[in-house]
Image (cartoon, rainbow, N blue to C red; front, side):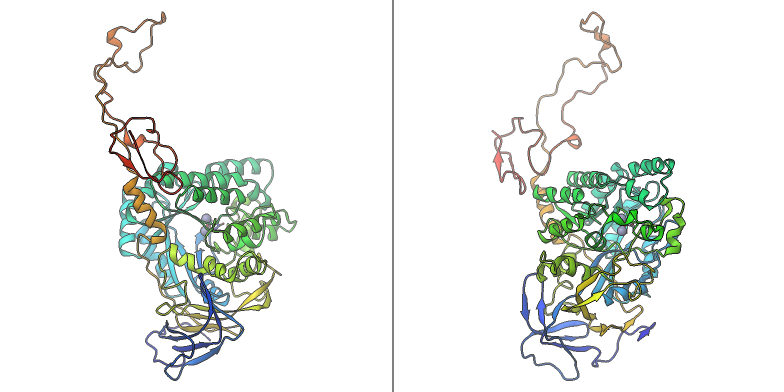
Amino acid sequence: MDTPSKFRNVPKTAQTRLLIKGGKVVNADQQFFADIYIEDGVIRQLGDNLITPGGAKVIDAKGKLVMPGGIDTHTHLQMPFMGTIAIDDFYHGTKAAVAGGTTMIIDHCIPQKNQSLLEAYDQWRGWADPKVCCDYSMHVAITWWSDQVKEEVETICKEKGVNSFKMFLAYKGIFQLNDTELYKAMTCLKENGALALVHAENGDIIDENCKKLMDLGITGPEGHLQSRPEEIEAEATQRAIVIANQVNCPLYVVHVMSKSAADCISVARKEGKVVFGEPIAAGLGTDGTHYFNNDWCHAAAHVMGPPLRPDPTTPGYLMDLLANNDLQLTGTDNCTFTKDQKAMGKDNFTKIPNGVNGVEDRMSVIWEKGVHSGKLDPCRFVAVTSTNAAKIFNFYPRKGVIQVGSDADIVIWDPEATRKISKETHHQKVDFNIFEDMVCHGVPITTISNGRVVWDDEQLHVTQGAGRFIARSLHAPEAYSRVLVRDKVNQPIRVPRDGYDGPVWKAGTQPPKDGKRPPPMAMDPDAPLPTRRDLHASGFSLSGSQIDDRVKHKASHKVLAPPGGKSSFSFS
Ligand code: URP
Ligand code: ZN
Ligand code: ZN
């Protein structure tokens, strides 16, 4: 069934009453055997021997795992990009998502430079709302900076249900922000209680590298990889961490693709900084050796930014960090282009539309590479595919957990079954699959979205437009609890002291050649006396030493340092 119609206000029938029996419920914190009764899209009862109203459709889940549906934190469905539009639109993309056990996506509204953010937001909602087959939410990108953008960010935060904004340090001249703009944008996001998302690659250096490689005659997809070595990603990741820390704004690094970028996040977290890292299915499931494939189409199909890394141990390394909570959750960056679309760059790799698939296969790939390999247990699988996303983006416990009162977004998972991934059988529109021929243990048997069976026995039962926009409120506790306390305890320090009233050197004058003191007229009588320190130039940091450590302060002045620093100390 595949009906393009609205279905709200349907009568209570077996369609809206479901009883899942005999399965093992897996949440991020525990696993237990329980039946689940669902009505009107919400989990109403959980436990043994439930007393439920008649007329419910019974789903036998014996031998299966019953988990919160996947939440894909990073998609670009029908995104206009690099002169074309991503082929998987909100219909095909969400249809494929539920076939893979994902019941919610967070897509991106990306305004053009100088476009109103509010206008872009309405445009994207207009594309998504009539087509989505599962619930969705939206990050909004900040691709330029002005007073208008600042005002619009505030409006979007307060009125549009968006609490996460994406900034690009790459795509020079298109989406890229410079450091000052990033600082201002992060300051604004912090003031509003939103989360700063960053695409971390140094766009200026990429631009120069691209010109150099093209001049050398390297026009194929291998040029894409070589224009963006790991340190290009690591540098930008570290820069984003520093700038976010300067303004005490929580940071979320999207599509962490390399060991060195992941290490930056891991170290920052050890230092107590509020940073989250999102590896994606592509980076966990395959690698960048494909860029050297002799078949141009095959190599081009893997072009994405940041690129997949040619070091084949990278996916396993990223999975280890995911296992240990150095990285927290997974998305896909699903942004798909057909062979013909990729061929726009047949003579110039800089024109190959960037993006790969993942929205359908993320859950199976992570089960295979994570759980089947022994790196993740099923609870951690749920954490990194669903729960942590709901917490960080602030819609937990509405989603991301199986408990009474939560939305009935559920996947019934057969850990024993296997399936082979192929473009021939996938539900996406794109004509290539970067995971082609991967055999995955762990198969989504049934997917329930908002209390309705949308995928069962390899059949889709979706309805275009049935998905809802999920509004998210500000100050997500997962991101903001610590940040707000730090605001209070880490105030910049002002040193009260007598003003300097001696002579002041006049700018631009030369000292006399004989080394003697300059005549009094060389002093600038108008120069302000340096009576106080410029607080904005302060180098105070959230952890570790302060630049004023050696300055004497009032005995009563106490400063609390965050985790990683001293717990409390006083100056004397
Ligand atoms: O190559 C990619 N990642 N395409 C989508 C846009 C982005 O940078 O996320
Ligand atoms: Zn990106
Ligand atoms: Zn992206």
